[in-house]
Amino acid sequence: MTGVTMRAGVLAAILALLATALTPAQADAAPRLVGVQRVGPTVDLISVYSPSMRRVLRSHVIRPAGSPAGLPVFYMLPGAGGAEDGISWFNNAGVERFFRGKRVNVVLPIGGRNSMWTDWNAPDPVLGVNKWETYINRELPAVVDSTYRTNGRNGISGVSMSAGPALDIVTHAPWRYRAVASYSGCPSTTDPLGVLANTAIVARGGGNVVNMWGPPGNPTWARHDPILNANKLRGKAVYLSAGSGIAGPVDGSLLQNGSGLIGGNVIEALALACTRNMASRLSSLRIPHRFVARPDGVHTWGLFKADLVNSWPMIARAIGA
Image (cartoon, rainbow, N blue to C red; front, side):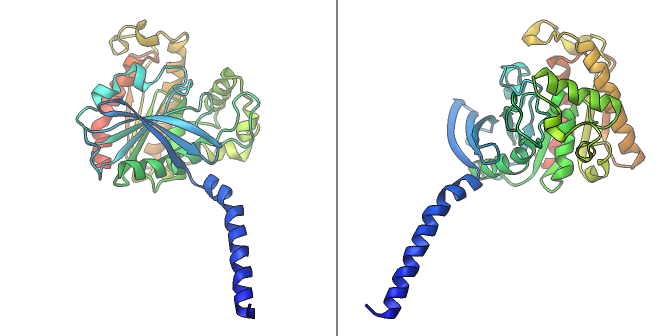
């Protein structure tokens, strides 16, 4: 065996060892589609591996018949139960029918209960590892775009718990989204209402808010405050809405689909106060937006659906749906 041949053989062996050593890490480094279940003529249930949370997460995808390529995507984040409790846009608001025939892929993630849909500083003994901002800004879109051959034009919305986080998510990835809607939530983290809302939602799920961004007053809280970072929403289509906390026609039957949330009147009144502060901030910065303060509405799916319908033309124009 010549010296050249020996060196080549040693090099090949080293490369083979490196490839074997790196394969698991490389596999973990990229999100991937694990499975697709057809649950309806135009509805899929996709399973995606999240490297940041090291687990498989599911999402409903409402798509046009035939799954045509080159369409935009509208992400609709869940409320406090993370849609894991069966209370969701998909189950309670008739979104499958609403989006039927529309030229858009609608993605409804399942997960993130009481997490504020953000990246936490530390794992929580009850709520586990939460890296939802990373998931929605990088991991899930990579799989959705590849699977459904999308055109890269995206919108996002949040409802109740995720309403403020939807705005926050866009400020951290403005290159990904053209439109954002905040329905009946608290777009704030650092003023008294924002601290109260974030702490209460996390605590309601048994989590410790200190594991999220550290204690209130930590600079990370300010980094995730859409009001403080509102300038990063410039150029986006922004829709903000909330009801008054007084029951009315927009709510429909308060007993239907779990809509009669205890304390819903107080929750919605607080959401309106938070949302009004967000609208005022955008106005002060001369950032165009639409703010709908309804005279009725007590945190029901009737209210949420009405604002989805009201906001859709604005969102559709922005993403080309």
